[in-house]
Image (tube, rainbow, N blue to C red; front, side, top):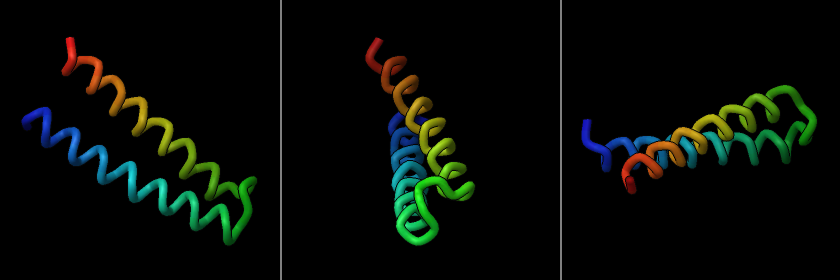
Length: 58
């Protein structure tokens, strides 16, 4: 898989999880387990994106 494909896939996943986290946070609260689960998942995806971006640049 090409690096640009990975960036596109990760960006799409980040956007979906971010939207789910925001919606859940607004409806169930910021300290709700589901909101926190999405937050943790989003952190992991962002970390992957940053690692991929760093590898791509060097």
